[in-house]
Amino acid sequence: MTQTETCKDKDAHTSEFPPLPTPNPDWRDRYRDGFFLAPMVRVGTLPMRLLCLEYGADLVWGPEIVDKSIIGCERVYDGGKSIFECHVREKDKLIFQLGTADPELALKAALVV
Image (cartoon, rainbow, N blue to C red):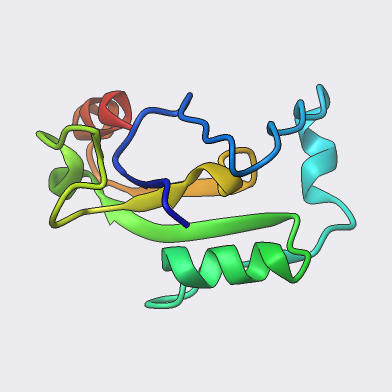
């Protein structure tokens, strides 16, 4: 697990792992008849998500990130303190949760992600 992301570029790839599969064009099929790690407080961390994928999870949810905490962040590879981390192996299987109460702040935060 050398390629860890902290609010990072979605197109990162390492030769350690095979290329990611092309997602199903019908996105609704991804939520049927699958094995999922559902959102849970303090358990949607990167190590837990990777472990669940290793054991066969089809989709994993990350922790809910509040809009104000991610506004002003920048994407960094292997940086120090992080708001959110993801790994190239979970790119097409990770559901990012954004918590917000304000549509304008939601847009600003979504543009960072």
